[in-house]
Length: 212
Image 1 (cartoon, rainbow, N blue to C red):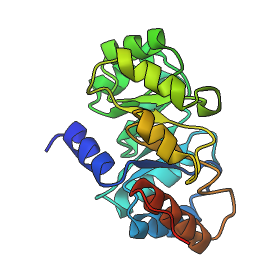
Image 2 (image 1 turned 180 degrees about the vertical axis):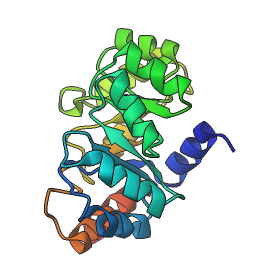
Image 3 (image 1 turned 90 degrees about the vertical axis):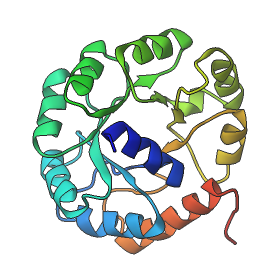
């Protein structure tokens, strides 16, 4: 199975990317263990977190069955740094052709941030594995539906920003393939058990049900 196949399988099993902005290397193992126990398989440590490469290295070693990587990746040098410590997922808030090309060259899964059809088509042309629609607060479900109408049918669209269990159904109905979940899932310093409880709520919403 290629890494892209593994990514597709992970997204099919749990169409959610955990964004652990602000997490520390000391906190990350317990939090990711709680998320994994709930079913999450895609984990992103933004590079503007404390010692992010240390967290990514430790998580990649401890959880080889998960796809661990970095968010807020802004240049090709950072792509190489993430790859060097075992990260396999590259997520950006923007589309930068150099970032996508370097990720593709290294065989990594790359999800650049896009907001318009022009950016989306350009990112796909460079080999992006999927598209992070960001910020989702500015792209309502109607916008996702409009983009889905013109993009390739197999293009993966993942709204990120302001996603909660309550608004996921509308985005899914509009054609979202999955979601990136940030502060509604994890905030800096949050206890692992609380993050795990939040993860269960998101997993239930992704399955089309809401827990009481």
